[in-house]
Amino acid sequence: MEIKWIGAALIFLSSAYAGMRAAWTVRRMSGNLRALSLALETMRSEIGYGRTPFARLCDVVAQQSGGELGSFFQALANAAEQPDFDPVQTSRALSAEHALRLPKGALEALLELLGSFGRYDLQGQLALIALTQTRIRDEQLWLDQDRRNRCRLYETLGVCTGLALMILVI
Image 1 (cartoon, helix red, strand yellow):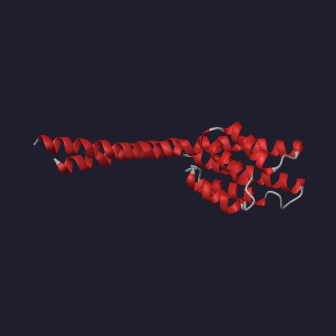
Image 2 (cartoon, helix red, strand yellow; image 1 turned 180 degrees about the horizontal axis):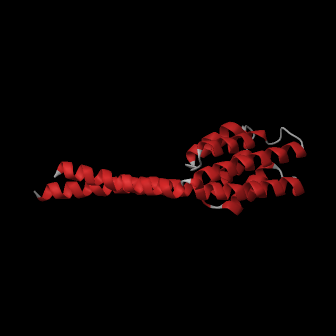
Image 3 (cartoon, helix red, strand yellow; image 1 turned 180 degrees about the vertical axis):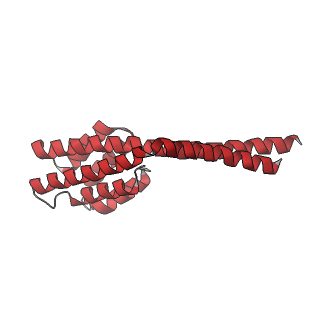
């Protein structure tokens, strides 16, 4: 009988943890979007005023950002110094490797921006950064609009699922 209770408690705790983890992921995405907005502003300033090369630009953004986004840009800066560097393929691989938590639209916007560096003149590059900033801002608004409700839903769903499974086991 005690084993049933222990099993039920473990099922409840694991389901509740899954709900809390899903809510944490949504909160983390929101924080990463804010950091990405600041990183894009840094990029715009560095390119506009200093005409900073891509590898150095990624290094500056990595130092300013920190966290998941900082490690992503630091790895990108290191990869940019290699002779066979392909920004699109490298960015996709690094975003998966560093588990960059961003909404799909924001990640695609970032990857498109990174793939376009060096293809346009200064004004074109600044316009593309501004477009990416707008897309990121839209994603941020969409995520923040229902973030509290979504997080609460995930947490409640995890707890309720755990309770339901616990009742079935007992």
